[in-house]
Image 1 (tube, rainbow, N blue to C red):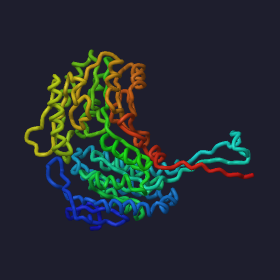
Image 2: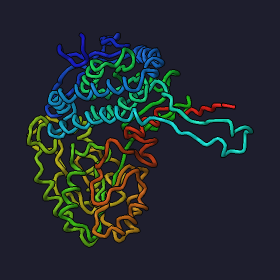
Image 3: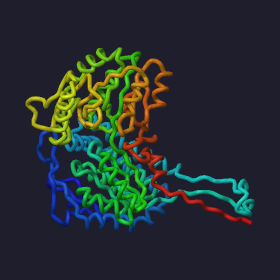
Image 4: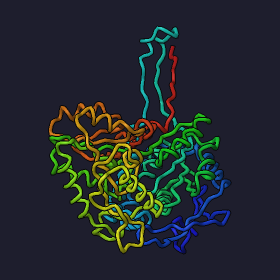
Length: 492
């Protein structure tokens, strides 16, 4: 075995620059959610292998941290070129591994290419500040001092990635860490490890030195806990559920470690009575059903003002019903499968609960007939009570509740009524009302007349409340991944 992606049906771990089988000899099947069949076996690391990965990264910490920035940038640009040249293979791997429609998988690869290019550019911007020492009365002698700050690498970064964007979101952790001079131990999700392993191949081939990037796979209670609590790891960057993220924050806090947490959301899509429905409805459909709703920024609650509620609901149901559900690898598929059968069962539970609260299922509400994978129909539910689970719990699937509201105060109350605050959208022709809502809705990002899924890879991204801590976005992540050091020079 000389590579991470299986050629004989099995993957390998990357530790200290070497691809190695798991010492415990344990593998798990990775299932294609479109077919329910295995596409290969992923290695499961032991706690000792997680420790070895951290130690390998720690051994490379000083050498990579003192590597000139232009050299690090060259490596990142080379990785971008390799990903671009491998675009179709990477996209097909994503589609097969996580069930993302192939058209969307290609977009994910393109975005990841851009992430490495942006990280290379941001190396030049990672600087400090200078201060006029003589502006301060104390300590004495400041007229003979020069003050400035520099940014030092924080140390070993643990990158824990999700299944839904197995390439781009893991890259949002690895690329800024490497750009800032930090070694990385990556733990991709066990549900979708092969994309991450192929990414690691490209990074190694692009010139990442031994030990600077390590990849281990395994459960959070063993492998993940070791990575979070090992004394040599200094920052944990995580994308996933709020429950898991809060557990990571608790463990990291006991050791005074920094965290970047991108967690759950109940992103409200607010439609005012003057909204252009010909724009709002297609945006709501994209926001709710892209990648089967398995997106942290998906439009998970549609809040519609009473005056346009019936028309909006009817039109959205018609558009949702027209979406083509099918295997991810097919070019015409618009809505692919969920990641596994447990997710399908959860959709059934949420819809049943909504019905029990007198909601009306306008379209969908069941598994498609004749499918063998983890499919669930795009589902629109109207007249949803705020007490229904689907109005309070992140569904992470292709079901969307429509909740009616009276006025702006009512919309703000409902939008802010959950523990989450990731992104929000407001559709209106009255920009003053749009700004008023944008100011009052508690979220990391509010988009006027654009969908909740909007994101710029170079700009700050993250949530408030239980949706996150810290910010991603290349420059902002790099700032989180460095320590500010004040340097004073007495030239007197």
